[in-house]
Image (cartoon, rainbow, N blue to C red; front, side, top):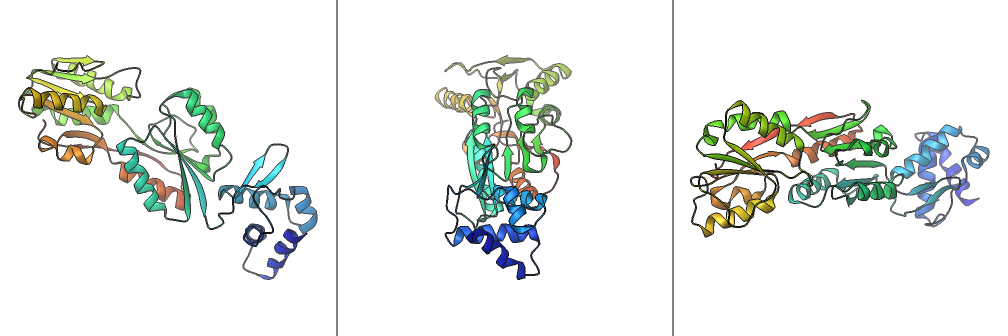
Length: 337
């Protein structure tokens, strides 16, 4: 069998372990055309018989090839070649909420930090449990690493726990997982509360503090809890609104936005009514953006550093670390508040 001959021919290279001999032999067989997409690899029992290697050595090699995205295992059928991209070191699945600006910023930094030898495929779940389950089931077992921004719902834990801990990194939203799993997540409640306390002198310049928060969106409940605790502790006249109605902006109000949709509507209404942002109307926003540095002299934001989250995620993958970190929220004080 040409494949077996190719693997045996590498036995003369003393620096290669048996596991590496198998991996390199199969990669060379793909590069030389001996193996093509759709071809089935010999069974583990057949490999043991032909090569005399330990069963765990064969399994380790096949799993390493799966991690590179070259091989896929099919239950009760065996292992099959699914790609000829042999220059890829690792195939990574990146599952995000959606392609919002800050997640685009994460992806661009993540892509740059990993480099060309890592293949990244991006998927979105849009905070929908059904979509999350469908996407996750479709990609499970086809990647060497899974980087997932989860829906903060305990019902998805069994899905995530079906991936070995060393192959899964939780990012962005925190989800309680067994200790062996890694995460680089945000913490919203205490961090937001502390930033609001830091802004207290500015907040007191306004008559009413209004938070836009809706239960049917992917808003972090920690922000809501922080807001309610803060306004109670410091006797701030406050209100929580689900939606913003066009033209309803009021002088003397400070508006706190989690979604940028309502932010731009209020900014537009301030312009139309000749309200001065930062004086007549206050604006505070979650998640920073380059545009927020510019408009109306800058929008004050409370935000994670998504570039730093992406950089640490890439380091985690390249070093195969165990990582359990909370990424701090930053406060950018600008003219809107």
